[in-house]
Length: 110
Image 1 (spheres, rainbow, N blue to C red):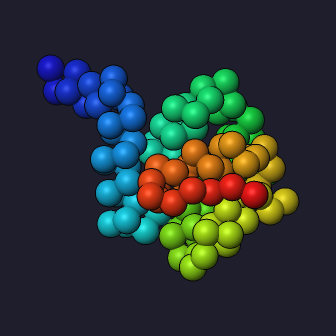
Image 2: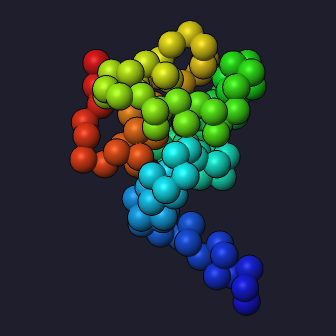
């Protein structure tokens, strides 16, 4: 029964993302891989393998990438963390989805 409760949070994925993941991001200053890929799956389930490959190619961890976002001062800097050539396979739509969960009151675009 405990496992069922653990996975039930994913049934209402949007609620989980905008409540739990958002709060965790602001409390810790970064996302863990489970939270990061929950956002990726919410945005585009088919993209998760390409996103994973891009992060591996970047030789950076998800915690380090999202901590850099947390520490960035301006919305443009936050968006540039993903759009720089340092992290392949993450474009504007995916970056925008991740930033939307982390900062829901802000609109990210180019």
